[in-house]
Length: 257
Image 1: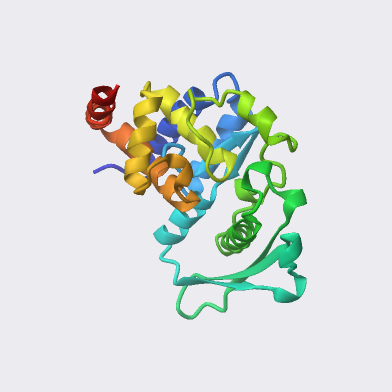
Image 2 (image 1 turned 30 degrees about the vertical axis):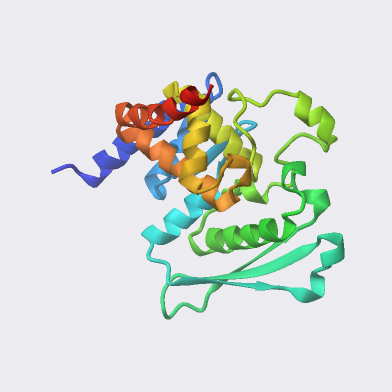
């Protein structure tokens, strides 16, 4: 029987291996030690997208926090809009989230705010959803004692605001994989494509089919996040099977050309 400690050591080694592939030449000894502590204590999975590495620091993701809550059998999350601090005309939103770890819990409260000045230019118009996500993340971090900031709470996830024409001229990473929602999802999708050497065009077609939309751009952020998580799990468990699945999207398109 595998000891719990040995299992966590194995999980850490896998996390470290993937982290060095995703962020080459960036994971030094101190970052590896930080990753080890996160893996041993919670544990978080790099493959599942629980963590992101930015500017030399580890950040937890919304998906990672939700998975942690599920493992901890969280009783529920209540989210309320704080109307007195909101201004719909100015796209300014504030939410209050309360996490109940058990049926008898008094709740752990977190607040999240968002407005055009503190969100990425790629999610302008979705400030309400960003504020809600930030509130939930802060409440979950309080509930489970996570001092690590979440990616979604950062105020500047992307480059400074730029006009649409300029952005369209800059080729996106991953050979045309469109951004949908926060840029971290796009980056993670591109990283998966590079890491597992997948065909980006076929991935894009598979993603649209998975989300039930004609194009990936039309899918909601939640659907895209679900697809990215599915792709990561499929690639880790059975890359050959995933490649066969992707190849099934090649023939129809080739027949039309």
